[in-house]
Length: 111
Image: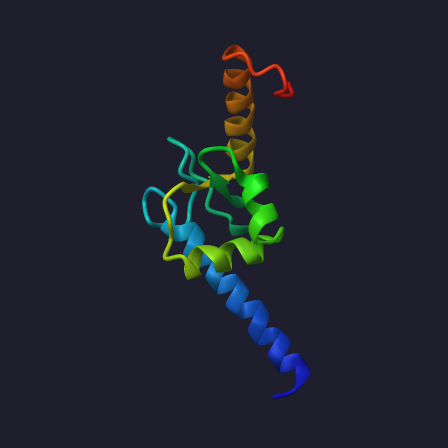
């Protein structure tokens, strides 16, 4: 195989893995946002959310790229603790998490 073909294959494998992971963590088992009432289906707008809010720490452990995260998820048999959200609802969930942390006395929590 030549280099261009290999790179094309790697990109396609990465995209296929992303679609598989995001579909698996969607409530409907279809490629869409899991937020109630949200109809977002655009792959470029969908993200993977760490439900417990530990995404940054987890990515530092396994590798910072989304490709590394998707590979880790597949290799670990789709563990619990993730959901598919659109970018807007990913941000909204993080804001809500930080507000709750502040209410619970976490003064180090930004916002």
